[in-house]
Amino acid sequence: MSEILVQEVQPDPEASGTTAAEQAATSAEGDLTDRDREILAFERQWWKYAGAKEQAVRELFGLSATRYYQVLNALIDSPAALAHDPMLVKRLRRMRSTRQRARSARRLSDGQG
Picture 1 (cartoon, rainbow, N blue to C red):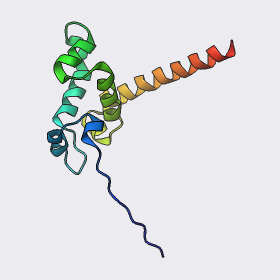
Picture 2: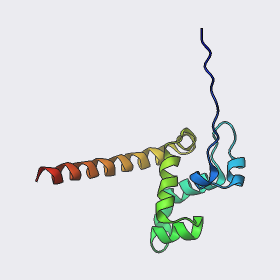
Picture 3: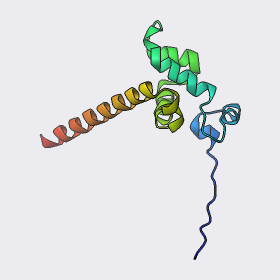
Picture 4: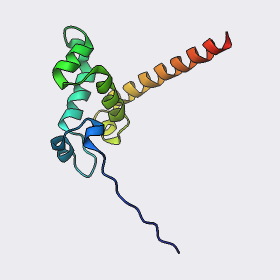
């Protein structure tokens, strides 16, 4: 029998947009950070904030809209987020899937012309 060497690779906190403190707040079980929970809470009721969603994101999280959606998409793919708020995460996944299908259909129809 041959042995398989597995090396655990730690994610780069700068690449994920999380700080060292947020990384430390995340336990080995994959629990959510405070920021992750805040993002999920914001997504649950962002429409209650006055003004544009992107402005609220910048004020609350200090992130550009693009970076926020990158973080959100990674977050809704995590099992910890699904365990934390299954209905919200499933709704966000469903909405993302619908948008992806619509983009694919548009690309296909544009190519048929």
